[in-house]
Length: 139
Image (cartoon, rainbow, N blue to C red; front, side, top):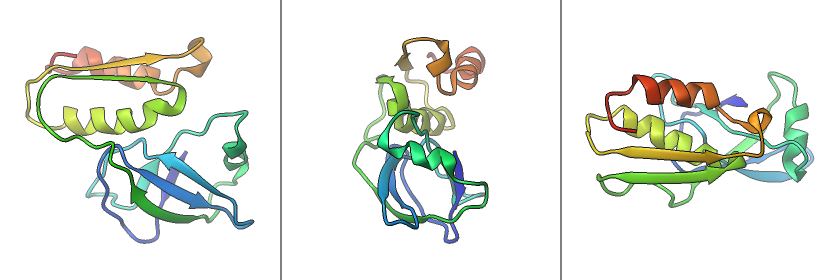
């Protein structure tokens, strides 16, 4: 899901936000997109069906939710080779980190491993496969 915050907010790839619905229920989601200066309020999340947060999937386009954050310390700290491993929606913060890091002029290897039960659960699979094929940085 893609959201556009009324007020831009800076964040580091890997952090999460809390979204609160009109009924007061709040859900924490890792931000799946890196900060973009051209669209500083835009961010993406992944919502799993069959979870308590699945009600987010019922939001109509243009719905308004409250956003707080960002929070979390799962952020890039040092340059060097990296192995990122995730399953399910756990790919969200790692996608943001990988996209941010691939935009930098660094040659260190970056490997992202993602596990899921079957192809229907593959999040951003084609996008990440294309990045792996096109990036000069070892993946």
